Structures are given as structure tokens and as C-alpha cells.
Length: 114
Image 1: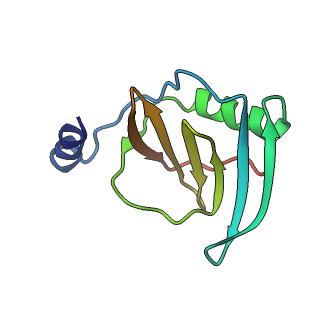
Image 2 (image 1 turned 90 degrees about the horizontal axis):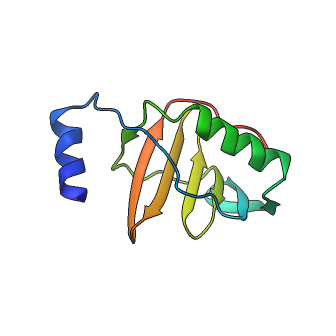
Image 3 (image 1 turned 180 degrees about the vertical axis):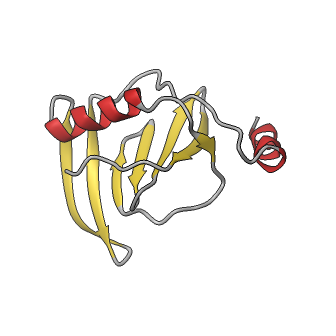
């Protein structure tokens, strides 16, 4: 499957996919990175306003994502065992697990601030 996604990205650089998470974790760890190291961490409960805003944004922006093979250094990282959301300057990179396989997608949008 990964090879197929990579070929699609090379042949169709404007190919876009839909992001429909099958489930959100009950809580998510927020980590703020500075100079490559964790400067601050906070566990966000499901009803935490930042986590609520993040889920709402991902639901609203479900269309227009692209498969992404680039490795990004974490900046504002929301992570769990099944989902990782890296908020960069004006780009969100999402890694999610489905059927024991990880997929990485990205989209040029801003992330909610914690």
C-alpha cells in the first residue's frame, strides 16, 4: 500500500485524499518543542478546549490532504498511540494508524494554539 501511495504522489503531485479518523484517543499528549527538545508537555483530556478545537478543525478540514513522505521535526505535537498531529508554521502533518499500518498526510492550514 505504501508503494502505491508513493507512486501516486510522484505521478499525481496534486492528488488529494480525505482524512476521516476512525476514532480519536480519549486523551492526547501535547508537546511544545524548541531547538529539537521538549520545552513543555501537557496531557489533554478529551474535553480539553484545545483538544476539542483540534478535533473540530480536523473534522472541518477533512478534504484536500495529500500523502506526504517528508520527515518533519516536531514543533507543536499532539500524540497518542494511534494519532500524531504535528502543527508547523502553517502546515499540519498527521500520522495515523489504521489496520496496523501508519499513514502520513499533510495540509497547509493553521493549527489551534494550546
